[in-house]
Length: 126
Figure 1: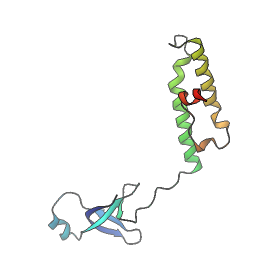
Figure 2: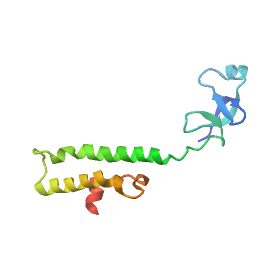
Figure 3: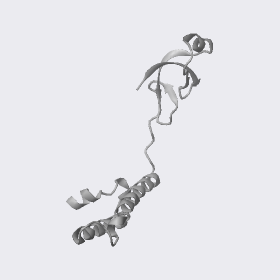
Figure 4: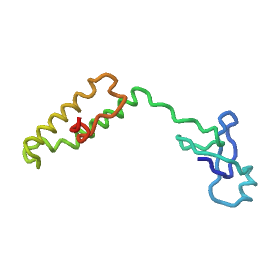
């Protein structure tokens, strides 16, 4: 979202700006800043409004890391379901065991990195 702030262009090619924070209008004018519409990009830098770069698409490797992290999280939070003192019934333990097999095998699917694995509740409904 564009904001009207005191700023100074520091890169004519990319239209990156230095934005003033605090102080008075007189100070900003004295150091060469002017009021302009600016916006902050995904990389936390400020640009003249309309020039902020779009966030790049993650690479396939980045997607794989992210989806694996999600899968690992689901495995970690269901670890306790397989313990002897688990609060679940034998049938529920069996369901969780099958779900955990689904998670461990998830990366064997074609294009598995394109979406996160299902949660236990989503998987159970299928």
